[in-house]
Length: 153
Image (cartoon, rainbow, N blue to C red; front, side, top):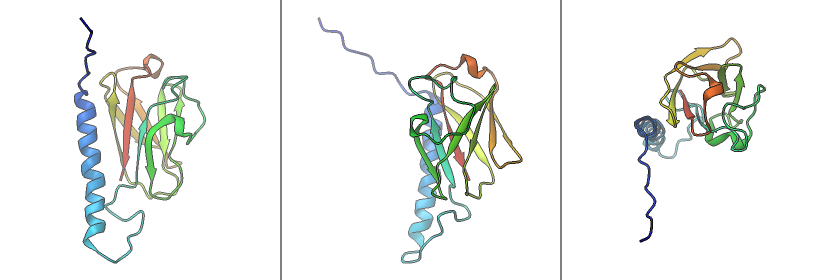
């Protein structure tokens, strides 16, 4: 008898974040489609300014992310910044920080994408970056499966 591997169901957090991303990006695409033939500014009001699916370096994990800002593609499953510049992320002791250089971001939301369901708090910092603090687990205890999605509007 052959063993059939079980397929894991996506976590509720992943489903909710995917739906939110779909509507956020879809809403921007819909808005662009409403004005046929008229160029839209990349960072228009009401548009998604950026997003980042942060996975951390596969060789080091998310908890061993560098303490300097990086836009290395190995840290992201996907990312977008309306300014055309790379999204940047770093770990700063027990928190993560993310920034969208050149984008007029007013607010961000963050949700766990995989692994442990984590509640996050978000704080705007004076340099325009956002501090992301996991509320129920220190980053040193995050495993490689503990990933998060940040959406900037």
